[in-house]
Amino acid sequence: MAAVAAQVVSAERIPIGADHAGYELKETLKAALIGLGYDVEDVGTHSPASVDYADFAHPVAREVETGQARRGVLLCGTGLGMAYAANRHPHVRAAVAWTSEIAGLARSHNDANVLVLPARFVTAADAVTILKTWLDTPFEGGRHERRVEKIERKEEQ
Ligand code: RB5
Image 1 (spheres, rainbow, N blue to C red):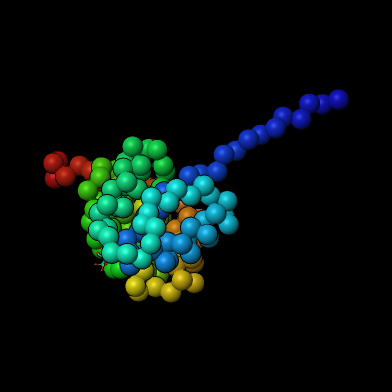
Image 2: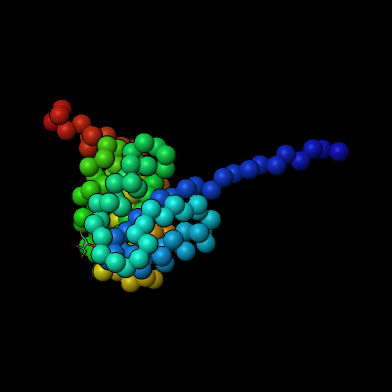
């Protein structure tokens, strides 16, 4: 009788963080990610009480910077503060996406490894669609590979 080898494939862990403005939408996206089979690490915030976005951007970005996570998700009111903070980390390419098309291009052209959602400017349904597009769109490589590599080489320009 042929032995059946059990193949254990562990789910990708995705860290997610938000400030108070993104808290409610974070809960929606967390549920969507879990439903899609991802292992979600929620770094907070855990209530709608006022907090500072950088306190949540840095833990998520640090995981991507160090390779502990391949990609992460952040939310704040405009998406801007989270993106500013996350993009201070080497190897992190945090993209604010408010449409599915931008999310797709952020992946295919810019290899964005952190998705940032402007929670005050997208509906929950649109945010889930944006998230799915970002998760499922591969990086195109080619000429975009060269361009993305230059992002980290600011001293050579
Ligand atoms: C909070 O009011 C708001 O400033 C913050 O969520 C974000 O939009 C900052 O970039």
